[in-house]
Image (cartoon, rainbow, N blue to C red; front, side):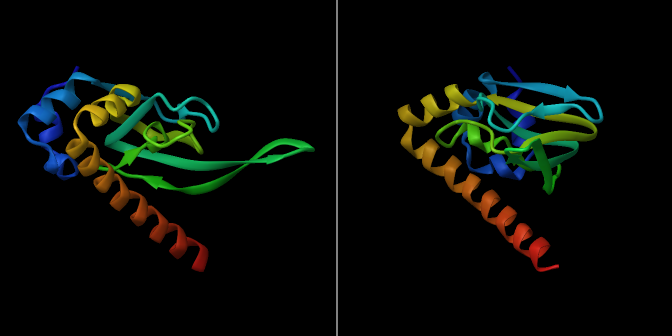
Length: 150
């Protein structure tokens, strides 16, 4: 469990009222990863949703190749103040990328299953959270388009 005040510091969580902040804080903890650590692997169960506090994460697609293990393709950076591991909220709840710590990383880790269950109980919370998540994903899509255009 983390302090609701930690969540309150970040604009992403601004849509949460006090009781919702407490509910999310109850299913979250703070984690640290050293430089180069793999936070999650593509195609593994997405049990956690993360929010980056400090450091950076490098995101890679793992492209399967029948004649070789797989090829990693850089997909972008995760910066402080951003969600990552969003597959924990989206079926089939398996990570679609590899995320590696780029420098020392400090993050909030939320239990994705518990968060989804809270959305079932409070549809307004679920709607607002998914709306905020959608904005994050739309920005990543725009960033990817810009990267492809270059």
